[in-house]
Length: 407
Image (cartoon, rainbow, N blue to C red):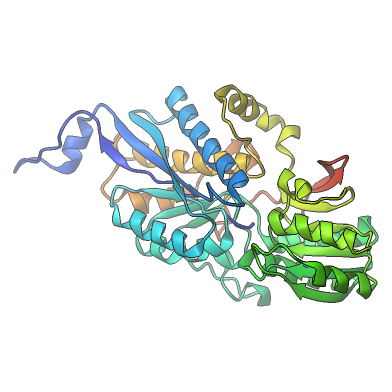
């Protein structure tokens, strides 16, 4: 998605006050520390309409920190978390980024949820050599530059990484399923005018037409509005056999509801932004047959996720891990592994230039995570290109097709 959390790593001395002498150095003092606390901060929409996703992100990062401590993953280091609420607002995300950069003890960032929020943060992190890993951003420009669509791929910030695949993959995957599997030929495309939604809709449309399908109409809606009846009427009158929506579940669920109430008994499809139970509950009529794509395979079907699911349940979190729980855990764990590498290479302590060292270590991270093999390519994008199509059946999302995308 799209979209969307913040990982703060703060070194804290736990054995008393730090004192410097004329013949001593900071590293000399660090070497005598018995323990260092690293704070993993989480920035996500913890309140508002996307809080169902944000709470799952926060809890999953918390679980990663607790697991690292239990296993003594990094000798001499204890991990804790500090959560931040960006409310899915770019300006708030930017303020958070400025605050984090100003704190020289912050050594890494995971997040945020939304691609639009991420755009407001990347530059500040890059200038400070501060690693950023998102569990949910899917906009291609974040890692491949603004000219990615022309094939001119240039990584804008070497500090940016993500554990979710991009909309270049997700949009094309959705179009191929609609055309080849669902046999749809005339689609009406709607987006919410946001970075994630508009970008995903454009990629889907291009691929759908390349395959031979026709986009019979397009429209735009506004986030946080609830009356989409005019758009629903346009869809009904267009003769479309399907709808594709680029956006999030609060608006997506209402759009599906109003399209069906207008008399167009056709499915709506969207990306991972609508893949949430709240999409289903937002509709006042049955929306069985609606579809969503999401990055990765269903964690419930992955052998690699069994321990994560069991541990999450045992931890007693009030909110579910939701769509990005597994990717959030893996994002946090990738930072933990980078810290582990940097500490090991520096005689068991964090170096003064830890930020730059962690960024360099991130490029070499590779491990078997909750969502599969976690590693990054030359753009900082995940090498895991697994995706799944889900369909609403009996009021629940049910996976209907999972595959590794191939160009």
